[in-house]
Image (cartoon, rainbow, N blue to C red; front, side, top):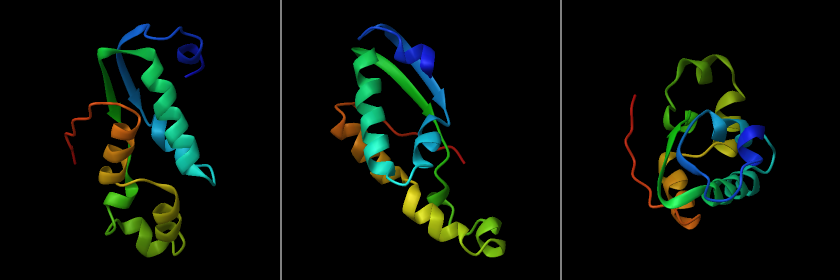
Length: 104
């Protein structure tokens, strides 16, 4: 991430990230962090370039076994992570032309 932040605007043709959003969602105020990150990523890409995001969206899996055995985990996930629809809306708000392909 630090290498990317040193690059100039519109200097990346294809960007592929894994778990980048998850790292930002660990903070108490994930909306500000996530929105700021999306805006920042938008500056690195030219209008026709591509950003592939591979990220965990744990709120999309409410029946996961971990929520049964760790009582506070579900509430933590609900408060700090995004679902696919919210992520899509935030990408659009950051001026991305978002396309979604869900893999489970």
